[in-house]
Amino acid sequence: MKFGVADYGMNVWYGGNWDLKGRLEDLKSIGMDGIERLNCVDAADAVYRAAEFRRMGMDFATVECGQNRGFGMELTAAFGKEYVWLVPGDLNRNTPFDVFCRKANVFVEAAAKLGLKAALHNHLGTRIQDQNEIFDFMNAVPGAYLLLDVGHVHGAEGDNLEIIDAFHDRIASVHFKDVFIKDESKGLDDWGHRLRFCELGAGNSNFNTEEVGEALKKYNYDKWVFIEHDTHLRDPLIDLKTSLDVLKGIFR
Image (cartoon, rainbow, N blue to C red; front, top):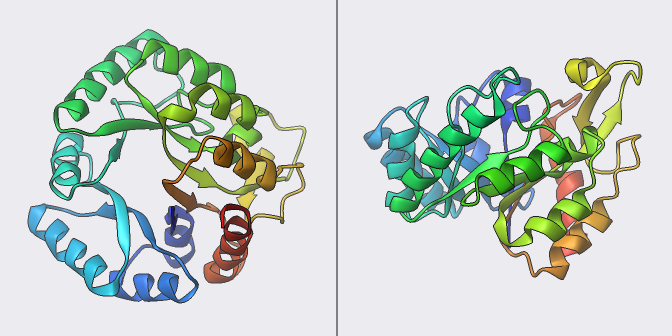
């Protein structure tokens, strides 16, 4: 098993990833194994960045090259990685479900031709945000995998254990975070004001990290586990180390 960071929250805090070597050094210093996505602008940039990961003894799970999803697939396959994010066009909640699934099936087939899994990231505010939608989607797109975000499932009042039981053999990676409710009067259509994501143990919504971890262990899950907090209120490395220690206590 590898522990890494889905570093969106870090980018928000710092304004971006301006220094890949520096970020890798920081993450390595707190015990991380890598970052989920290698972001690049072209093939040469991808090779340069992949070499930096290698020099640092760090790793990545997938490649993203802007909005060029097909090229990102090709680069991900070239580096021998397992999955790509399944982004079949517009993720807006107004997108008709059947249209979203039709495009997703085509995306999945294209990834499979390169030996890749296409993994859907459930996320509040996107077309697939809650438990029922996850089940409907996974049934409608049988070749899809899950990039399971247990924080977003919990934030949408879903049951991570039921999802893991149902799709444990179709989980490509997992995002962990805790959930802090800011205003219960807000609905999921205004989820950014309803809640924020934070380090494990700092939430107030009864998210049971150990229970979710044990459910994954039951099925011998041994792939990437990523920490993603989205919103940091202090130095991200403090929050990330806190969550990492919790997860290593569960999985090791």
